[in-house]
Structure formats: C-alpha cells, structure tokens
Amino acid sequence: MVWRERDVVGEANVEAPPYLTDEEGRMLLTIARRALEETLQNGRVYEVDIQSLPSRLREKGASFVTLTQRGNLRGCIGSVIPHQPLALDVRDNAIKAALADPRFPPMSAHELPYTEIEVSVLSPLRKLEYRSPDELLEKIEPGRHGLLLVQDYRRGLFLPQVWEKLPDKVTFLQQLSLKAGLDKEAWRNPNTEIYVFEVQEFRE
Image (tube, rainbow, N blue to C red):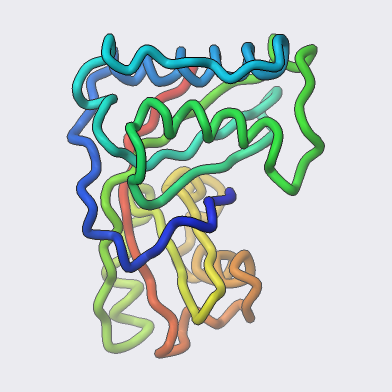
C-alpha cells in the first residue's frame, strides 16, 4: 500500500465522512471502475458529477483502492488524511493504484475484465498512548484496527484486511516495521509512534 507524500500525520484531526450505506459504497466502486476504464481505454480522466452524489461522498474523505487479479494483488494506493471530496479521492486512488504503484508495472486496458476493485474508506487516525510494548499489544484489536507506524521520516501502513494474513499481533507489528524500512523490532522503540484507524470496506 502506498500513500501520497502530501499526507501529514499531524493533520489527523480532520473529520472523515460518517458511516456510508451499501448504496453509497456501490457508488464509490462504480466511480473507481469508471476511472479505470476512462484512463486505460480512452486516456482521459473520468469527470465525476460531484453535485449528483450524496452529501457523504461530497465531503472530504480518505480512502485506499486495492486492485486484485485472481486473488493476487495488482496495486494499492491511498490517502490517510482527508484533503478532497471522498468521491474524487477514490477516483484518483484507483488511477494511481493502476498506474503508479511502484511494486507493479502500469496496468493496461486488456487487464480490466479480470481486475477486481476494493475500496476502503478510512476513519480519522488516532494516536495510541502506551507505556510499554505489552500495553501496546493490549490496545490493538486484530481485524478491526489498521495501523500506521511512524519513526522519524519512515512510515508503514497496514489496512485492517492484512490481519487475515498476519493474525498474530507481534508478527503484524514486525512486518509493519519492516515495511517502514526499519528493523523488525522497531515497533518496540519508545520513539516509534503508532496510530490506529478503522475502515469501511466495499468490494465488487
């Protein structure tokens, strides 16, 4: 998962959209799909009719868009701080997941029929306060919490869905530390900050 450099943890008090309905979730999936089709097939940016959307989708929101093909990851990019309408954030992240995830080559139009889309809408970040690694472990809820690890300029983020593959808390934090480019035990460092968030997940 990749997030934009413009995201600043210190801005985490920005409000995220309230709980979305299933219909609103389907709208976001449609926006993501249309964005991919317009970009990959026609070379154009999909122009979202913001005014026709429900108010929740017009409010600022943070999202991740994950692309998979036959169960394998094909791209995942998102934002952690709301800075634009949620509908536009999903559109932009869909395009970036297809073309700008540094782990994969850019997608082509012929991949669209077997590409599945998942949209995760993030709650505001909340910094965990703890006095020891054991207390940190007690405060983390597998399956519910996504985590953002920050140490100096290094960051690593896992969505809550990652618990499906890494159900053990210590292993989860070790892999998150490695993802941030740190030693696997960096999560135990007193200078490391841990933020939690939740997501509302929508899949095609």
